[in-house]
Amino acid sequence: MSTASDARFWDRISRKYARDAIADQGGYERSLERTRALLKPDDRVLELGCGTGTTALRLAGNVQRYLATDLSYGMIAIAREKHAANPIPALDFQIATAEASMLKAGRFNAVLGFNYLHMVRDVPGTLARIQTLLAAGGLFISKTPCLGDMNPLIRHILLPGMRAIGQAPYVSVFRQAGFCRLVSAAGFDILATENHATRGNDRRPFIVARKR
Image 1 (tube, rainbow, N blue to C red):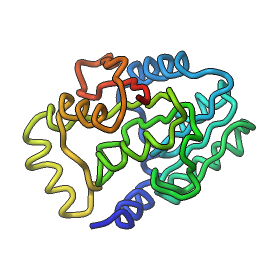
Image 2 (cartoon, rainbow, N blue to C red):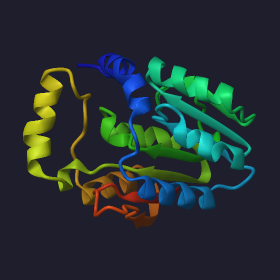
Image 3 (cartoon, rainbow, N blue to C red):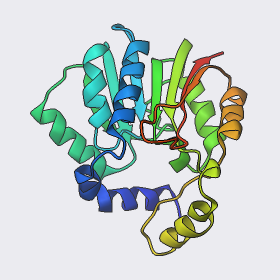
Image 4 (cartoon, one colour):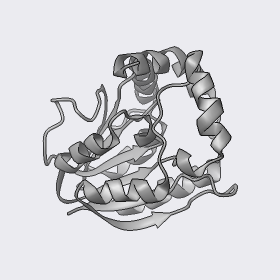
């Protein structure tokens, strides 16, 4: 398994993913509202793992520049279709990961990663890369499933079984406390850790961190 195989997985399911409803719409709206309040009109924003662009299309009109990226060609193709139907001058979609050379150090005032970091293969390395992409005092805003805090059957039986038959991508398993330690170790001060779920506790903390 590799990043290339991860991209192929998301390419294959991209149309189905685009049709699926958001599981907790209320929680999603709370996260959008909180993120929008943190962004400033002159900000340059990078979103990693943007999927089909739903969040980018909701936030990009409030900032100077918004670059939304994903490793999946299929996901970005759908995002660009949505963007063509609802053009936002500040918004651009690109196929890229955090490590892409097109992303220059210190360029962004905010980096967003929603439902993203548990999908990367090197979480500490990706967090360190995000830190370098941010300008001084820039914000990293994430909402990350902490599978280590979820039902053990999910991480020990369901996910391995689904991966074995090609029905799930690679995922990293960590607890919220461990994830927060990784964020701090990458050079961030955590400003807020919040639960935006409106249907119980879904173990996806919304975290706001500032580049140290």
